[in-house]
Structures are given as structure tokens and as C-alpha cells.
Amino acid sequence: MIAVGERINGMFKDVKKAIRNKDKAVLQDLAIRQTKEGAKYLDINTGVAVGPDEQPAVMKWMVQAVQEVCDTPLALDSQKIPVLEAGLSAVKRPPMINSCKCDEVFLNQFMPLAVKHSASLVVLTMTDKGPLQDVDSRVEAIGQICGKALEHGLEFDRIFIDPVIFPVNVDQKQPGYLMEVFQQIKVISDPPPHTIVGLSNVSQGTQERPLINRIMLVMCIAAGLDAAIVDVLDTDLMDAAICAEMLLNKQIYSESFLRAGRM
Image 1: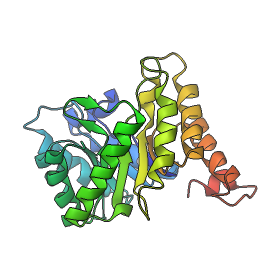
Image 2 (image 1 turned 45 degrees about the vertical axis):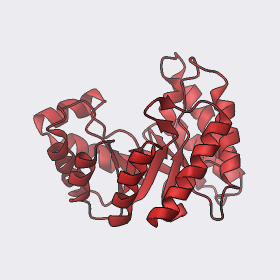
Image 3 (image 1 turned 90 degrees about the vertical axis):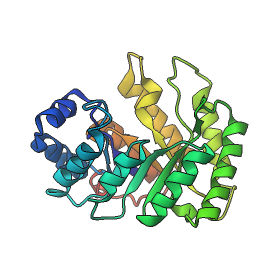
């Protein structure tokens, strides 16, 4: 599983404060620790730390601050093209772009940007009307996403489909729907697009968040999930993911398989 470290995000209080104080040491510490714990990408998101007009400059500053201490590829997270372009102007390694809605207008803006910057692209099964809620509508949207990718020359192995996790206390049927979507994606094309989830959404508003996140991630991996935006600093979560992949014969067993899975 490709782990995308979620913590450099202005939605978190410590990062929000660091952005407002231009304290890059906080971001750099998170970048180093998340990389050490197995993050293959670092999510960079201004969140609500600053207003819309300031976000492009802040995104670029965040990218530059992290890259001073870490060469882990970055996942630039915004639905605003100017914010993404500002961050992309400073990246040193091929990045991931997150998060594109599956509306045609968004796909026609984000896909050329991904091609131009040799980036991977996370596409949500979400339109301006909201997230798609059943299996069939999600799979239909994924087929349309693949068609658009062919039109724009974006290789399928650089597309990450996010079928959008609902909080389990909002709709308890959704985790099962996601398992089916992961399995159906595998037969859409050869090679198929990748799959990714923003894991922490599933436990929003619940009392047993770490447990729900951990079990959900293991279930998703068993169903074929390729990547997840997660708290890689949650040791139990990462151990569970690495162990699941080992038991599925995706990682070689050794006495140090947990350490090896973070490398």
C-alpha cells in the first residue's frame, strides 16, 4: 500500500498555527517523522489556515519548507487550480495532485495539469452535487474518468480513484459498497487505475476512531486497495496495514517485516 501522510494540513491545529506564524520547523518535523514511519507521499494542504487569496503563496511556501529537509514526493491537495499551480512551480519530484472531482469541467482542468507536470492525479467520485453514493454510479463515473484520461493522454497507472468514504455513523452500508468498487475497478481496464481512500473520513464523529480506521484499512487492503491517505504516525494502524499485506503475500515475511514495510 502506498501510504500518503495526512498531517501537513492546515485543518490540524498545530499546522494551522505554524502556517500563520510562518514556522516551517513544525512542517519539517512532520515531514521527517512521517517519512520515517513509511509515508511514500506527503499530503500538503493549506486547509483553512489562511484566506483564498493567500493560499497560492502559502502552498508554495509549504512545499519549499518541506523540501528543504525531505525528498519524499508530495501530494498537493487543493481543488483550486491557482493553488496547485503555485505548489507545482516549486516541486522537485513528480508529485500527486489531489483532489479532482469527476465532473467534466474539473477533469478538463486537472488532467492537462497532471500531464504537464508528470504528476499522478487523485480523482474523487464526487460531482458538484456531492459524492456518488452507490456502486453502479461510482463504477460508471470511473469509466468516464478513464475515457477522459485517454483523451488527455494521462496514463491509467497515474490515476488514483477515490470512491469517497462516508462516515460509518452516517451510512453503515458504505464500507461494503467500497469493497465492491475496489474489486470492480480491477476489471475496467488493463492496467486498471489505482485506488485510494481518505481513511479518516470513515470514523468521523465516532468514539472508537483508531479502531474503526484500523479495521477499515485492513478490509480495504484485502479488497485490493492500492493507496491511502492516513496518519502514518499511528503505529497500530501502520502495523496492521503492513501485516495485512504480508499475509496477502504482497510483502515478504521476515522477523523484521514491520520495519521493512516502512522502508
